[in-house]
Image (cartoon, rainbow, N blue to C red):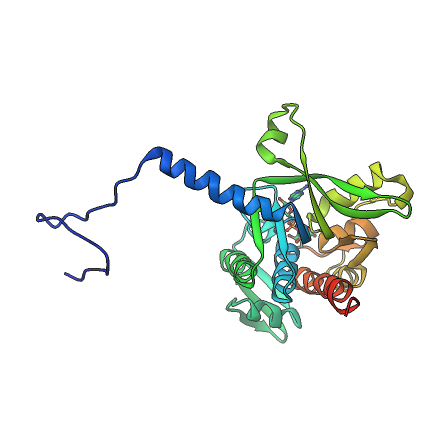
Amino acid sequence: MMRKAGEERDRMGKIKIREVDESEITRTIIKKALEEWLNLTETDVIIAGAGPSGLTAATYLAKAGLRTLVLERRLSPGGGIGGGGMLFHKVVIQSPADEIAREMGCRLEEVGDGLYTADTVEVITKLASSAIEAGAKIILGVTVEDLIYRSPPPKIVGVVIQWTAVVESGLHVDPIGVKAKAVIDCTGHQAEVITVASEKIPELNLFVQGEKSMWASKAEELTVEKTGEVCEGLYVAGMAAASLHQTPRMGPIFGGMLLSGRKVAELVIEKLLRRQG
Ligand code: 48H
């Protein structure tokens, strides 16, 4: 029988599993998580939402050497990818976003000139692993519920976060603040971060109206066009950009989300790295 290196068996051929102590497991979790959190209290870029736009942005930002933290409310990355179109397990991506999907390792099937499809789980896992391999940190179960700001002129300098479990329990627990040079709202249809900014920082003059009805081609083009800086330190990408600028929805096609994620990353890289020389 093949034996893996380091794998020990007793005389009966039973695998010997290392003994573990409950408090050692607990100490390891707390020590390692807190060590990382201590380095994350002030970072370069915070992305709210690990959907297609957020994960794509994270990959390019981290590849450029920026310290990138993705905070995702749910316990899994992927956002709207998993639901496909009405729960069918395929997503559709059009050119030129196929280049991005391939760069992330997704295997695409060409179904028409410049039109491609892939399995939902493959797209989620490849986008997430690309971001992680590039050096981004993705933390699940954390909700971005407010912003940290300075004024005048208004400037976003971080986010206020809470465990999603606490938010959902309705307990009164004060959240904590995490600072960043740039915050990107990739929270999808609800544009949650921009909505909070519009309500709590009136001097920004923001108003989230929500997206318009479906017009796929126009929506894809406008989502990418409207991706960008909302005010100093705050950016919007993906479906949140459509909600903020009241442009049409596109339905279950994801090319625009990948292109929007790449565009916002390029804008942040330009601002934080290139302009500072
Ligand atoms: C932390 C949060 C918070 C918060 C939400 O919805 P998403 O997939 O967003 P996009 O913009 O990357 O992609 C949109 C796409 O999935 C889609 O819905 C399309 C193409 N629709 C077209 C149509 O016509 O309907 O991902 C957003 C992620 C999710 O995982 C949320 O759980 C998460 O953000 N999130 N995370 N703090 N406050 N709010």
